[in-house]
Length: 336
Image 1 (cartoon, rainbow, N blue to C red):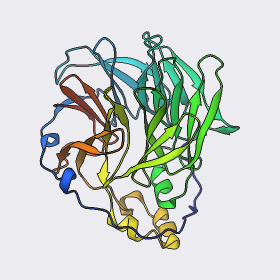
Image 2 (image 1 turned 180 degrees about the vertical axis):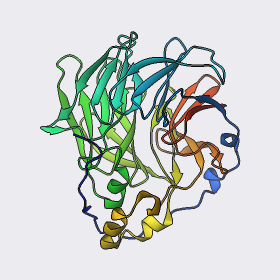
Image 3 (image 1 turned 30 degrees about the vertical axis):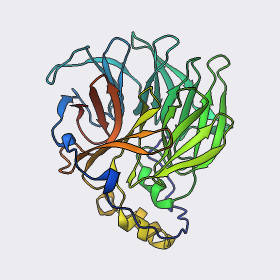
Image 4 (image 1 turned 45 degrees about the vertical axis):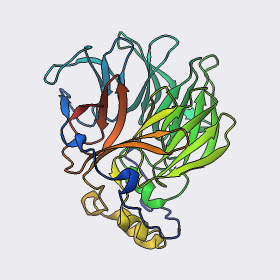
C-alpha cells in the first residue's frame, strides 16, 4: 500500500487536555553536547532515521531514498560510506540478527526485511493478523532470531504520520516474527503510535516507546501492557545498552498546542487538512535520554540550538554515541 495515500478526514478522538512538564530536574538541559556533534554525511538522500554498529564495528544507516549506507570501522567525518543495499522503500529501524549477522530492517513501505552482507534483500513479512503492515517502524531481535517489531498505524504511513498523532487513536500494534515458521503473531494492539522497541536483558519483556502519548511501556511476551513512565518529550527509537538501561531518542519536547487541542477533535480535523508547513511543528531541539528498566531517567543529553535536531535513533558503541535523525542529511557522533 502506498504510504502517501491516507484518508482525507482524520477520525480525531476527544481526550482531556494535558500540560507538558518542563525540561527541569533530571531533565534539565545541563549537558549540551548535542550542540557539538561530529557529522557523517549521506552521499544521497536525507533522514538517517536509525543507526546500527555491526559486529565488525561498521556504522549502518538508511535514508529516505531507500539506500542503506555502511561506513568502515574507525571511520572519520568526511569518509565516504559504501552503499550496502537498496530496499525499494523507506528503511527505518535497523537491527542485527545475532543468529547469522544479517540485518533486520523495518521498511515503512515494504514491511519487515532481511539484508545480507552482500546486499541481498529478502522480504520477511508484509502483513499480520490478516492486515497489511501499514507502517513497519522499529524492531528488536531476540537471541533465537525472533523479531519483535512495531506497526505504528493501520491508517497512516511514513509520509502522513502527523495525521496519526492528530487523530490520537490507538491505531498501532506490536508484532512478533517467528524465523522458523515465518509466521507473524500479534502481541498487542490498541497502542498509540508504537515506535521504538528493546528487549529486557532476560528476554522476558519489551520496552516500547509510544510516541503519541509520550510514554514508555513494558510489554510481556504474552502481551500484557503496563506504563513505565510519562515523558516530557516524544520518544522514538530505543536501544538497549545491555546492562538493563536503554537509550531513548526524543525528536522533540512535547508541544503545548497539540495537548491543548485534545478536547477539540473538529479543530484537529481541520488542522490535518492544512499544508504541512501550517501544522504544529516539532520544536527544533536535540535530545536523548538514558533510562533504567523502570523508566527512571539516569542521564540526558541536550542540543538546545537544534544544530542537530529531530533525533530519532540512538546507539551506544563503547564511549561513543551515534545519533540518527528523520530530517538531517547526516548521522551524528558524540562521546559519552
